[in-house]
Image (cartoon, rainbow, N blue to C red):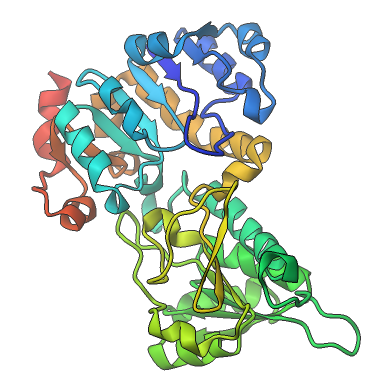
Length: 374
């Protein structure tokens, strides 16, 4: 199979979908790898590194036109919609529930679009989202600490305090992978850490994992209001796989928060969990609403592309190999986890939460796979 690796053109995105090591694995399996000129430079992988891995460095037109399977990190932007085609398999983060124009462009093109973030294995695990969630969670606390500095518009408080001065209070909304990693770093920085979640079972796990160094509370409206009223930093870490994030923090609730307190909304890729959140970039990451500083960068792991690219390739490569070795239809038919990643196929939305988000018709993947196989 001919596998293409496109260069990311979204603002401040430095990751690449495949390392040279990953390219070498694919070429050793007999596949042809096409890497867009300069695609890896932001992650410290020059063209020569891909050439040494037996990949071919090609133009943007060639990588989009010749690939059977196209690998990206972020979703296509509007200028790339015209490159979508019905005989292409696209494998990338899509977050379609928060992006109706892209969803309709994918449907209209007839492409097979597989979303990293909805590949779901047994037990509800999201193996291709997990490493970026780990990175984003750890960055959330790091960037929250930076945003709390007075020069950034924050309260001017050190997350860990000093002897004789209490630490900042960090409230993490959601105890999944993002929330755990945000709490882990906040604990390491000696903050006063609270985690709100709706699952008692998960809270028991977090109690053990973090050795009792955090305060755990059931996420109810009243508990949320009381927690954020006293918070210096709030990390939004809620996730409903494939669906829009719930708006837990309303505009009215900002009035409860301290002036200069910070919201880092990691859920912004899925629409954000604060009503006042809107996507920002690494170049212009923060804005203020009602005295509360918002950090809502939609591609947080892009700030650390070397770490992120290596972590991403580690988990995506087995799925890429499966599609390349067996073909799309056979790979999806044999792997239920990969099948859950298919969001759009043959002009239809095949992921229920995405169809619901945009009022589009939903068709089960099983109805379309025989057509894809043919």
